[in-house]
Length: 235
Image 1 (tube, rainbow, N blue to C red):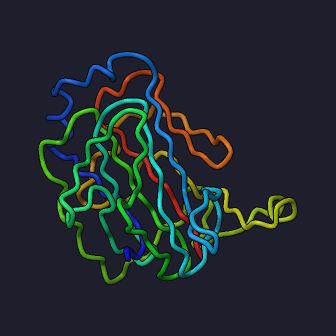
Image 2 (tube, rainbow, N blue to C red):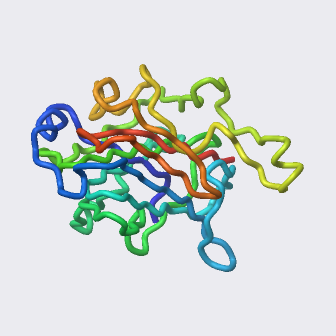
């Protein structure tokens, strides 16, 4: 079991070095598109759920990820308790983080899942997608500061999830509209391995929802690594 989720992406000097590396032929023209689906395990098996669904303690979840271009993926989670865990690639299995166009990947991979635990709040999963492999391995995640307090989603001021009343009345689901994928806000405190990365990565990303699928797209081929976050709300 993996408790909580976080994707910490290694950049620093590797970021600038990766920009000079050749890109795959599939990345030379046309918009780049990434798709993420959140799944939860229930009595009838795995099913796709709304990215803003407020999860409960003990819920088992995972992601489905697909791109229309070749590249490399790094995913790290920071739980509501502040603990970090790399979800993709999994060091323990020697997993390759190369992703092929139009192929679906499970995060975490294989039969592993993560179980929602820790204080109510938000898990922050960082996604780093890059057209060329980073020249340095992702660093080990740092220890959690003793005085750590999970940040509230930008613009909400709330440390605990809140239901959208209109969705609750219409569907009976508790949906927190501040959850789901977003650009990492400038100035947001990031893991040490990501320090400065947010100022260098592309801001020209578009986020849209298609049913229960989240689509992140760039109008042009990615010139280098991009980073965004997916917030999971839970009780």
